[in-house]
Image (cartoon, rainbow, N blue to C red; front, side, top):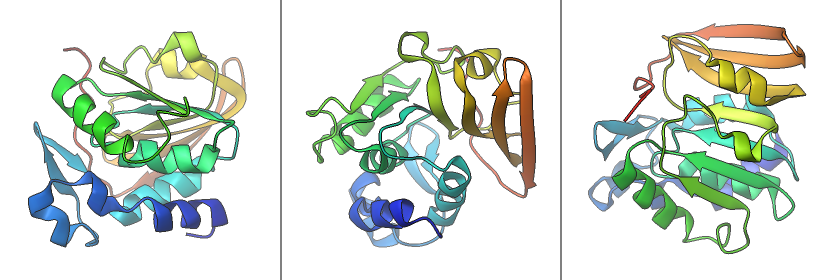
Length: 193
């Protein structure tokens, strides 16, 4: 990690607070861990890599798709601060409740920085769009059209597509710059529930 705001977030928002208690001893290991319902919390180096690509900043409006146990949501909320906002989407209702409960350990929900919604992320969340940044934590087969539409011009998105992490920068309405990074494995994007 090279960005001070991301380093600070990792030091204050510790992964052990977002894993099942029986796995807390393994929470600092650089491995994905099960969080229930067939889902995982990504390994720390992968999350750090994705956040460095995403380049979140204070005051931004961010969509976090596939929030799982809430770790990426809390990291992003710490970075955007009280003037920013995070819309967290999780399709599995039970996992959404766990994520929301984990993030409540901090003051982000109480301050109105974070909103949780239990729904599929395939259509994004139009009500809070456009977004400065979009982070997706499950592997899609392609970038959903809604994400492209809801990302601001000049905005950035990080999304796993198959076994790659794609960094997407929106230059204009239908103008996207895409960089691909191979060698990653994510749980699949759940399109409908």
